[in-house]
Image (tube, rainbow, N blue to C red; front, side):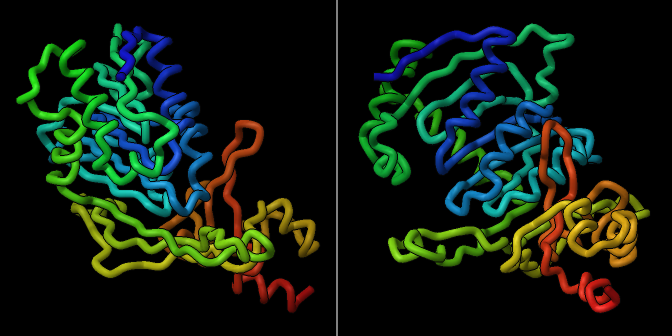
Length: 304
């Protein structure tokens, strides 16, 4: 039986943050406007290294300049996910958020929560038993259908012949324009966990990127061929950690990365992403991490 709860303002924020944190293998974010605040980024960041986590994002409006609908910082953050589809629909006005078990239907854009100026409301409901995750992910189990039917009848006043809202949003997503897509590169885990069949993430392929940085002519550019972004065999470390291990000033490392075209100020470039650079957060502060075995560091190692 589906459980429905009405949410207002701060309740809604907490529920959305919790929905993201509790997502196991699947998360759908549908919002015309996207500007991820720190809490939402922190909740999503926990999923960055999961090879079996799938993220679907749909935004809309502002066809002449989509960057008015999705902030560049938020876009660059989302493009780090190894298994993501970002789609665009100019007619989108609905706001809908869904994980493996629960959904939120709301007036709230994923846009710095819109709470400074707006009164927001929504409903949260569960459509599947958390104990049946394997069946839920199959998408055909009766639990889903029964849960959604209960929502339609008790809350939305919809008859049995009405459209299933979960399936409707899935259809809207799949029929929207694909702008960005990645697929994870998965390898066997080492040690006893590997012996038991465990896998780990080793980077990802960029299958399509129509959200590459704008050119001087303000035209949209795209990547036509898949680009592999490999994590590498070594771990990612900060510039300060590299500074200590290589026994050189930290600014030499950032200068080298800048000259190599891997970073631009405090942002990672497309070339940097392909080399395995990634954004991390420590004590609330974002920083760039580098694969410790990056070949560009060999010149420094040889010199030392």
